[in-house]
Structure formats: structure tokens, C-alpha cells
Length: 187
Image 1 (cartoon, rainbow, N blue to C red):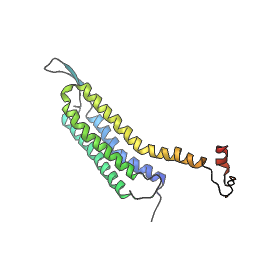
Image 2 (tube, helix red, strand yellow; image 1 turned 30 degrees about the vertical axis):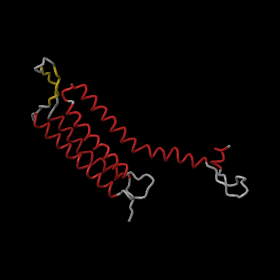
Image 3 (cartoon, helix red, strand yellow; image 1 turned 135 degrees about the horizontal axis):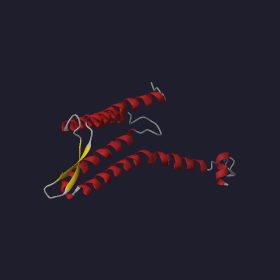
Image 4 (cartoon, one colour; image 1 turned 180 degrees about the vertical axis):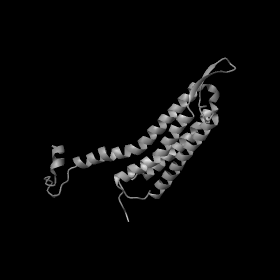
């Protein structure tokens, strides 16, 4: 039995799944407050390092980080299982395959960029920052492209072609089958 989900239930579901992330980030910021510390290395270079000592010390940063990454990983696994379970649903805007490709894209990107960052760690913080920013921009733009370009193509290109294509119902080719909306587009 197919049952439609009301909009308020979808909004409630999104709010319930986002709420733990907001709580963890608020606690992380409140308890392990980050601060900038100036360090001088052995090669007389000055580095500004972000420390989050706060109430929890340095260990609290790792605890909050792994809680956040673990929760997001659980949501990712749930989304992947949901996209596999709904992959054969017939719909014009079925997003399960696009979500699966987006997840694959982000996992591939993270598996390829993280080793590059570790290899180039001695090259300097600017090089690492540039690689990370390029990876983030690529990941988001590719994911958004995979999500929205097929929909925009379907809405703007395919539907416009259907509107401007004349339909002829008579065998004499007089154009009797033209509808009012597409006859104005032709003439």
C-alpha cells in the first residue's frame, strides 16, 4: 500500500535528524571553546594554531569530533540503505539513484583527497588549504549538479520541447490538431 507522507511529517523528520548535530556543535562550542594560540616552531616560523582546551581539555575535541562524525556516518548509512531500497520506485523525480551517486562521489573524493593532504603536509598550510577548498567546492558542485541538472533539464528543456511541438490529427496536414498554447508558440 502506497501512502503519501504529509509535509509536516517530512519537516519534523528533518528537524529530528538535524537536532542532534546542532546540540553536539553547541555543546562542543560551549564546553570546548576554541582559541587561537601562537606557536614558534624550531625553524623560527610562527604558526597560529586553533586549540580547544576549554573545560574538557584536548581530549574533549576528539570526543565531540568522533560523536559528530559517528552520527553523520549513521545518517549516511541510513540514507544509502534507503536509496537502495527505493531505487526501483517509478517516478519522474526519483532521487534514490542520484543520492547513491552523490554518496559515491563524496566517498571517492574523501578517499582520494585525504591521502593527498597527508602527503603534502610538509608543503605548507596554504597548499593544504587550497587542496581542501578545491575538494570541497568540487564535492558540493558535483553533488548539486548530479541532483539538480537532470531535474532542470526535464523542466526547462523537455517540457519546452513538448509545448512547442505541433500535433496534427488530420491526414490533410492542415494543422487542425494544434492546441491553443502551442499554436501561439509556432506563429
